[in-house]
Image 1 (cartoon, rainbow, N blue to C red):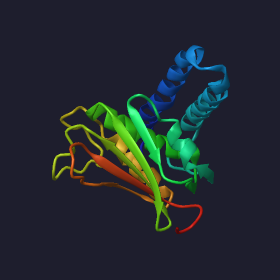
Image 2: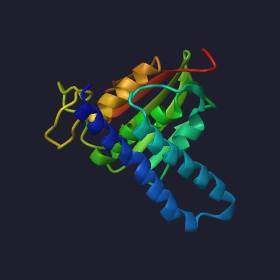
Image 3: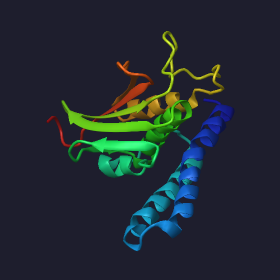
Image 4: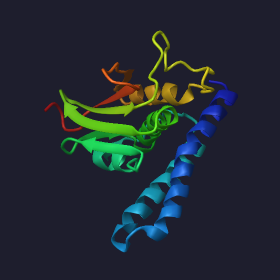
Amino acid sequence: MSDRERLEIVVHELRSPVAALAALVEALPTVPPDARGRVIDLAVAAGRDVERICGDADIVSLRRERVDVVSLVAGFASDDVVVSVAGDPTVEGDPTRLRQALGNLVGNGLRHGSTVSIDVVERDGRVELDVSDRGPGVDPGLDPFRRGSSKAGSTGIGLWLARRIAEAHGGSLELVQGAGPGARFRLALPSASGAR
């Protein structure tokens, strides 16, 4: 990977944690006192993500630890992002890289639709995170994971990188054709608790 490509990726990836920091700082005055600790935890995580993205030369290097998927997806919940989790799944992974992958999926969904749903279920030794939007969907024959400019003005970096992060964790990221409108992507990761 060239220095220019690496710089493009870093600039792309800084958008999500910087936007999260800005939103958390703006929201803090209206957050009830008993919930401020959670907001501060999210802000600290976003700050650490910025530091990691800027300082790590290998975009998909991993620092594995046990990751509570409920906490991971809760950081994305908002008026426009609905989260549903079955059970209490965990994965062995890098929380910064997983937030990057999920942030790219959510950001993509919000760009192409008005709302996004994240549905999490654990089955057959995997934790599956389905990220769906109500946009126009993906044109048949188009590879959404290919880098390069699209008609919609996208560079394709977000989905390409999300797939690389999933694969680095021993998982996968696929476009799942659904019956309804919009696009649905499935991020599947090995469960830390084994098959259920």
